[in-house]
Image (cartoon, rainbow, N blue to C red; front, side, top):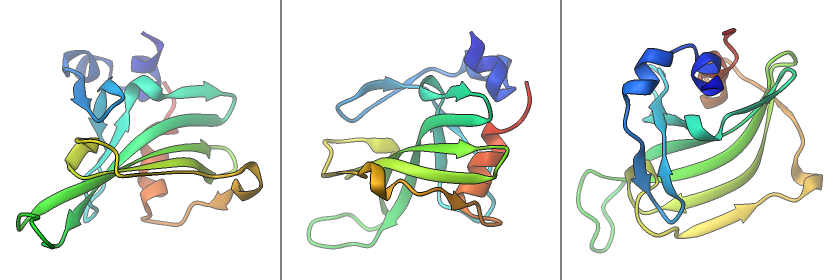
Length: 141
């Protein structure tokens, strides 16, 4: 599998079962090391490379403060489709889907697709979500 080489963790990824979530079916969520950051996962099945550009989906779990019937300590999540240009150290986001549970679980509660005019590349800031994603995805094989 080419994706295992791209992520540089073939043995680990091969041993992980795919996680089922949302309406999209099974995903292969791999945790990204991000100290002091909310839980962050890359869907290894979605990673595609073209030159220095990596296209992928990632899931960000976010703490949900109690509201209405929500349980204390509950987590929500967002699944984001994005691209990183590893050479230019830039990113852009093309789609976001919100879920009521962690790891993109439950039925989607909101979807936003960005228009091509909105897809401006942004510089990756230090210790940002995209800095951690770039560290994870832009490594050589």
